[in-house]
Length: 373
Image 1 (cartoon, helix red, strand yellow):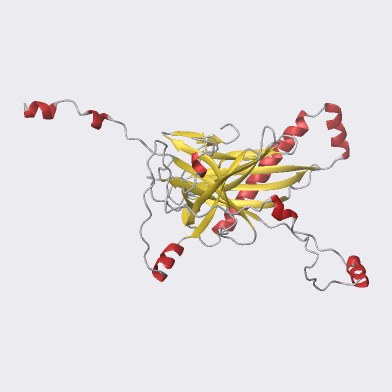
Image 2: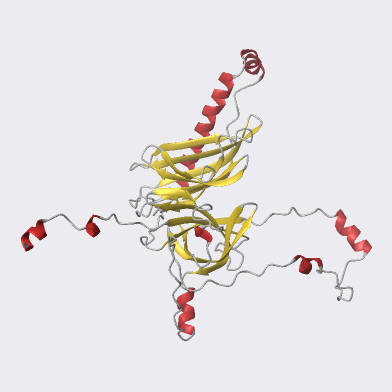
């Protein structure tokens, strides 16, 4: 009887499929010159949640009314090229213009260990009550929600008649200053890095490309050449599709087109497969025949250092409803399998959104578009 039992069908527990928890992908944003997220003013924007192999809009998934991705206490690993640079703990969710954000605190990697060495140990926080909602990664009790100024406080600012005054310029000094050239205001740069929260996911793996001396400059030149070639294709298509009369006039009055000058170029190099054969993403703008074009191309580097193009998209302000302008944010392991996907910020006619692509051998496969949910 024991032998028969051992040879019998497996138990129901053995047949049960292993459940995989949610894996959330978000973006941490801040302004200024600091290359690291600022502790008090960084904001987390949820992008997508992957559950059982399927992606959902993180702003809608398990919303009651705030979505699961920005619940108080959820902890995100903040990553740069796959390496952890710190954690972001959501203190409180905020909704503005029907968009959910997570306000909280960024903590640089290693800061907690340094603080623990400097201060005595504290008793562990009590466990949170269990519920039936899926669990993202959580840590210690969340930081207090940032205090918001009320309308009454804002209305009373600078309305004290007894406030002291500082030194001010005279009328002659102000007139002399007005004649001087005004320095152009440059807004602070906006930074974006990816963040991942997964209660049982794998350890993050870096996607940094180990380049040889001078290799990055060589790859940048090759990607610029590839981008110019793609723009030339669209230029020839536009000329050939125009009317015959206009084309004949251009042939008689216009000489050979000027070489294309690329501006605001941005290059990302990501070793998404861990074999030091990276995928490159290059974005730039160009003035073509009096109009501005936005170019984004992606290519794999081959073993002989040549490039194999897998993606190209060119658009302008008149076609953003169909072809958005793309800017690569970073590579991120969105599936939890140790390989990297490419997260883009897309600018369309209705504003910005996020798009997630899987870099395949011959193309970029769309995994998630926040416009479609």
